[in-house]
Length: 391
Image 1 (cartoon, one colour):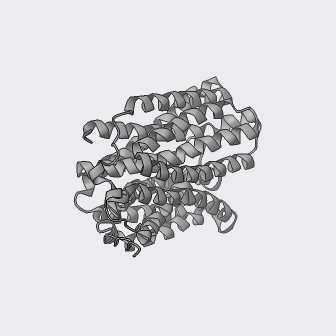
Image 2 (cartoon, one colour):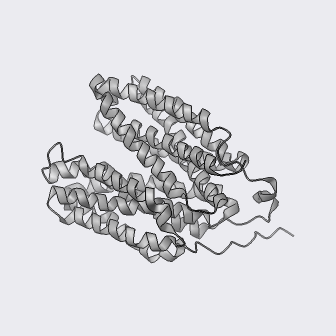
Image 3 (cartoon, one colour):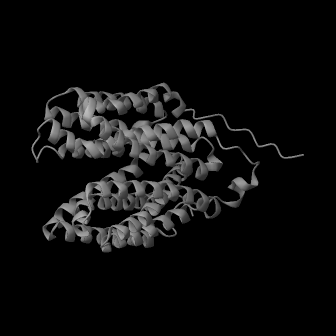
């Protein structure tokens, strides 16, 4: 099957399924708190558990993709999500909720890794940048999911959450059925890495690009978790203004990703450097500006950098070892969850001292080394040498 426009739409649909399902899961938490009767501490444990099982899902995606192809691991992960989300909706006890989120988390991590593999493979086959557009599918779908949750709020907090989770599961299951046979297939026998000399994985490149993915998700988690809290509690923004920081951040990510593939042209570094600088300035603005409206704009600037950094990093990582894409992408994806947890936890710990505003300088400082490695985005690595065969 040729990887053309049909494959691009099919892969994009899986990104949309991921974005819609995840946004539904996290925005359903207030309703699930009321239904199950848990406190914020338990919610934090549930989120941490989901991150840990997602890391396990990423490992599972690598093994399944190596044997059967990333299209199989992607469909497997989406199927696990379609099963897990209704179980989350049906949970009536903390233990059942944790078990259901654990299952969903495995599917989440499997899809995170597998969809990135599919995106990189599609990009290699088409010979043109597509990852930014694919990530835009996920961002746009996440925004739609939040709007759906808002629309269903008139059913009550708990009932709205349950209904949204079931809707998300139906959408994901429909996408699984719709894209079967249209995803990027496994490598043809003559392209299979097993027929070529066995190569060492590019460990240094995996650590480099994995660290940059981690930094991107530190910034993302910091804004996602703490932007509304900071605007409301520290800058005295009202109920109307407080959520706009996150909304502006997501809108900037979406806009940036919609045009990212056209802007990247022949150099990833030329797009990376200015957008990351904008993100650093945005985080500095969040930390130093005392006006709520100005801080909302600053959060949008952060979205410009995060919106480009994630797809550009996966794109560059895909060039580290084209015949070992599954292993490389799955291992780099693991850094995603470390960044997400660190971003949420670190800013929470720093909120007491030196303060939540100043704490936003942490992701700003962590983003600085990205500028030093910008050239590596255009020239990821030298091809690793074959592993010597035993004599």
